[in-house]
Image: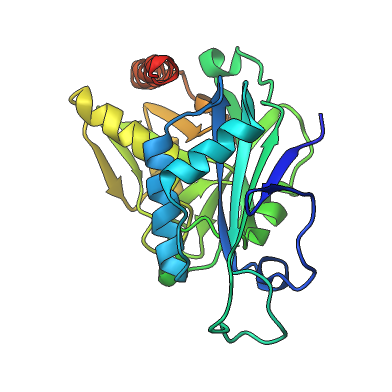
Length: 277
């Protein structure tokens, strides 16, 4: 179906041609799984959105307003994208004092992933593109996603489900659409995102669930050679939830117990979220 879109709370399908989101990528976004009109993992999603807005000096809409708009565009199962830009303005990088933000909430069909991927695992490749280091924007899900677009264009093999991205010094950072977790010698770790990369709301949830299961997750600098020696590798985002990795560039992995337990905890938490009035 075509997306159902609200722009600043009104049904619409376009923004001004001089919106700074179009001109400069001056804005942020979040992608959210919705079930029965309820945004899943919403506390973490809104917290991440607020953090990203703060990094760019944007006002973040209230949680209740966004949740109501999500329910309007997505009364059933859907994928919702929230986009916040600094709004329309003239030419030039300087931020105008009178800038008025643009708020977009759009609903799309929920993706239909093969259920076997969550059990048997996915194939991953190493991307040649290297992420630029910019601590000021590290973790922020801004509208500037050209690095991810170019990295994703490196392959067309449909049996490869994700690409692994490193920074210029060879540190593993993220997937093109996901965050990475590694189990090595019994310890759960995830890459530090203080130089570059996107901190996903699902990444936050996985770390919280791991802690509740007495499985602390440390943020570390992680080289590719360390990933290749791991006992388990898995990927997360709000739509796939959690996918174990079964291969990276020919190196085989087995889906393991940590990924399985955390995925079960994610699904149980989502089931409870939908039941809450």
